[in-house]
Image (spheres, helix red, strand yellow):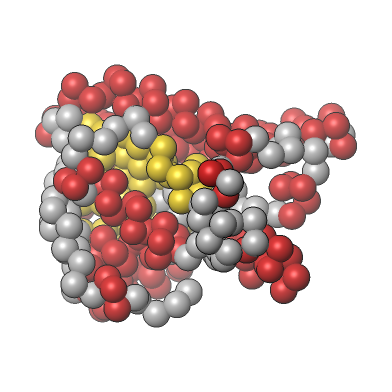
Length: 270
Ligand SMILES: NC(=O)c1ccc[n+]([C@@H]2O[C@H](COP(=O)([O-])OP(=O)(O)OC[C@H]3O[C@@H](n4cnc5c(N)ncnc54)[C@H](OP(=O)(O)O)[C@@H]3O)[C@@H](O)[C@H]2O)c1
């Protein structure tokens, strides 16, 4: 990822200083960029990934760079038991405070899983692939949201942000990814209606092509092709995703809930 952008050096968004923020999948890509922006705003950041070593490494780096309290949390979000343990550790650390949850962890994008349309999958692949992607992207977000709501409700305050994707809005080619990311938007709308009266806002991002995760696996030609899908003519950066996340989490977005913010360089507006 690029260096911390100079444009964000002076960043201070209302409502984020000392806020407790949990980011799932916070050690790489957009989640890691968001962790840095939250830390830059003075938030206390809990960083999750499946790897204990990675979570500790990222937490140490964040604390050294920004001086804020940081908690590493190793858990696979698709496991209800691991999510329960993660939230128990978070609640101890934060004295049962949680202002922001970012459900960012996603099943790794593999070219085969992304490119194979439904009719070309075997019955066994249909069962396995749809279950696997749904378990991380949708069920993981549901487990984390349920636990987060229990911490947010006593304070009548909170913001939950789901990371979805443009195929959830436009369709793509009948893949598990589209289905899980679209269901995530249903969960987002449902929670925003149910918990608005308790002061809890729930929103989502629908991302286009972002230069993280799968980006490094692509050939130079494929990178060029995908860049040109966007009217802006390039890939988005993790920093641009992180900027939208911290905006939605902050009090600047205090009257926004149930919304999907599209971060795709204009693809869906073409
Ligand atoms: N990049 C894109 O173009 C794009 C486009 C649309 C939507 N998105 C969505 O944006 C989100 C972030 O994508 P990214 O490209 O920034 O990802 P990334 O760079 O691959 O990073 C993924 C992060 O999630 C963690 N993770 C993966 N599976 C997990 C699990 N089961 N439980 C807990 N943590 C897990 C990873 O750490 P460990 O491996 O150590 O667990 C890592 O910290 C995903 O939801 C993705 O679907 C991405």
